Image 1 (cartoon, rainbow, N blue to C red):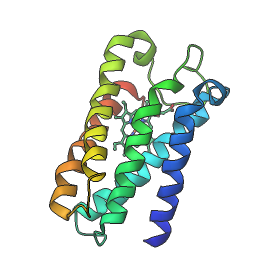
Image 2 (image 1 turned 180 degrees about the horizontal axis):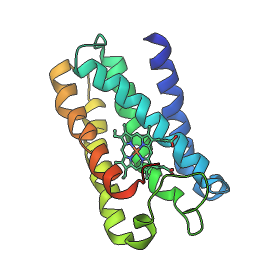
Image 3 (image 1 turned 45 degrees about the vertical axis):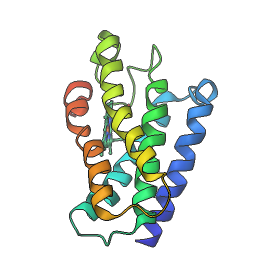
Length: 153
Ligand code: HEC
């Protein structure tokens, strides 16, 4: 558990760093966006596990999961430049074919993640009910984006 939280904190820092360095990191955007989604997957595992009661809830772990989601959602859209639609990726052509809809889907992820981040940043520890209210809507965004913008292989 402790290990996972530490890995997540690293992931959040990494994703935050990506956010500022979009121009240089875009040298290998596929690699970068996959790494960001892997941090999202880890945060979902931690946060979802706490929601289900499979992992003991602590405010620090809750904040780590939220911070990772927030950082990922802020930077993720920067890693889909023209030409990165082919190669070792499961990103669907719809991303490049329907850029307006894609932006809206990104926003559907960023908006609850930002709200959760603001809620988690307030004074004092966030209790489990507040964590549920903040993190649940973030977890609800995975499915529709993957269905619309990710190809199965
Ligand atoms: C705004 C769209 C979007 C949202 C929201 C989203 N994903 Fe993804 N995800 C993608 C795309 C696109 C890929 C394919 C990445 C690629 O190949 O470039 C992906 C890939 C992944 C991967 C595989 C990464 C790899 O190594 O190839 C994991 C794990 C993942 N997502 C987990 C999640 C979880 C968990 C959530 C919800 C908390 C989530 N995603 C929400 C778009 C999204």
